Length: 74
Image (cartoon, rainbow, N blue to C red; front, top):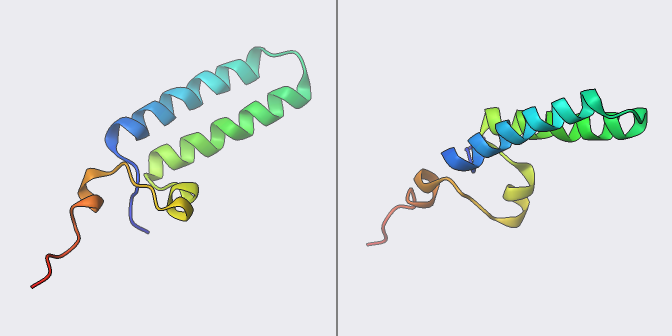
């Protein structure tokens, strides 16, 4: 599994996950808290792993290293 997220993308995902965890803790509606918590978990896992399945499906990569790893043709 190749990483398809750049460093800035990963940092923003982790920060947003922490914000969503805080929001899930302070919201009074249980269902909203569960949904927000699950979204936070997904963002945390994708930020830590550096791989986003949706990016892979759409062919998007914010990782500069994987963009430049195509071998030159001769």
